[in-house]
Every structure is written in C-alpha cells, then in structure tokens.
Image (cartoon, rainbow, N blue to C red; front, side):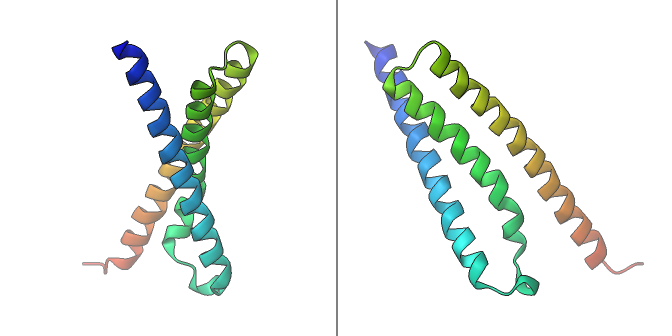
Length: 109
C-alpha cells in the first residue's frame, strides 16, 4: 500500500514539475519574442534545457499515472532518455557560455 502511494505521488510530482517547466519555457519564449534580438538575455540559453527537462518529467509522470506498459512505456522511456541527454548537453553548453563570458569580462592583470 505504501509503495503504491509513493509511486503515485512521485508520478504526480513529476507531472506537476514538468508542466510548470513547460509553462516557464512558454513564458520565456513569449518574453524573448517581444524583445529586440540584440537585447536578448543570457537566460534565453537555458530555454532548451528547461524544455527538455519539462518534456522528460511530464511524459514520464503522465505515462506512469495512466498505467502504461509495453510499447507505450518503452516509447516514453526512449523520449525521456533522449530528453535527459539533451538536458545535460544544453546545461554544459550554458555553463561553457557563462564561463566564456566571465573570462571576457575579467580584465587582464
């Protein structure tokens, strides 16, 4: 009984966090479209990473709540794995861009 309750609550949490991340991406996208291209904020580099995390969490949570098994859950697992790898790639790219910007901003000694 406790295992079922924990599984359901973790699936709900994943779904809620995933949907919240996707909503954040939508808001950042709309705000980014309203601004001039030259004035883009560095936060726009994080949008793909947030999108991938949202897709990963929302699809896995929804599939677990629906009780999917077999080929459906295999597809969801594949989408989640691709999204997880893409999240790591985008996070590394964002960290590298931030480090590069800090190096350029630091005056030479």
